[in-house]
Structures are given as structure tokens and as C-alpha cells.
Image (tube, rainbow, N blue to C red; front, side):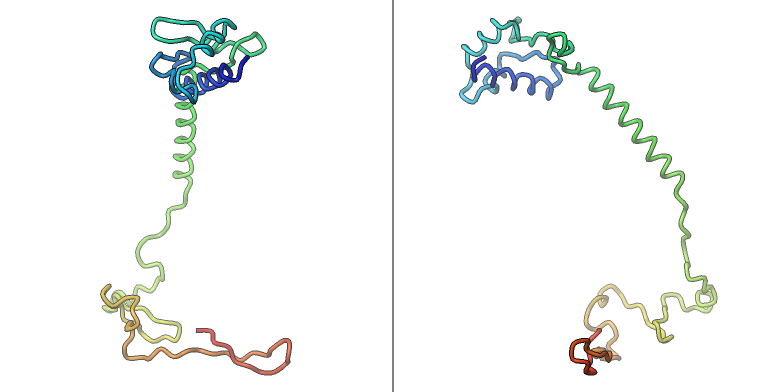
Length: 174
């Protein structure tokens, strides 16, 4: 088989699989099968080798879904490909449905269990680690350097012993 015929043959199989045409290649698509456009000598060579036959408006690849051990191309039919795709979709959806059903529902609302704060009118208040109340500001001021204008932001340091020199030092942690 010539290089041109091989190029047309392999691209015809690929194109037909992508489009789901079961080996039929219409004339208007022959220009896509070779880099230089339609290549009549390659088409004739494939026809002489009985790999495809001329039909009314193009070519039909021979032995499309016949097993390769029997001399066919061993390709799946478009209907079978769609059936397999649909089966996989149903299987995947059933799996997602099972996972969704098996998920433990998470609690909603107050997860701290501190109902006394909500009842006392402290809605929107949290306590930081020191136990001091921390107001919740509008979104206009959140994530800005003025989140808590009454308290300056100072760096926090911790003492540590340098493992190489053995000297006491400080490093910034916040």
C-alpha cells in the first residue's frame, strides 16, 4: 500500500468513527483525508485492494464491524457506541445517586451549640480565642486593614533556640 493510500485509509477510519457513519465517507469529505486534498490514485488503490467500494455519493469502507481475525476492520457500529455511552451514563448516574443518598446530612444553623448567645441578642457576635467579643462588620470593611480600627495590628514574636548556634532568638509568627 502506498503512503498516500495509507494516509487516506487511516483518516477515513478515524473520520468515520468520529462522525458515526459506520464506514461511509461522502465525496465532499474526501478532501479532508489527504494533506493535499482529494487523491484519486489513493482512492483507486484502496478500491483495487477491496478496502472500500464506491457508492452513490462517496465510498464505503468494507468489513466495518467484522472482526479483524476475519479480515474486517473490527470497528464498532454507531448504534452500539451510542448504546454503550448511554449505559455508562446510566451507571454513573446510579452511582452518583447512591453516593448522594449515603451521604450524612450536615447540621445547619448554629453549630457551636451556644443557643444562649442567640437568645440574648448577640446575633452576629463571635468571640475570639481570648474570649473578647469581635463584631462582624459590613462587607464594605471586611478583609481590609481597618477590620478592627480600635486595635492596632502589631507583629507577634515567639522565642526559640537556634539549633545551629544554640542562642535564644525571636521569630515573627504573625
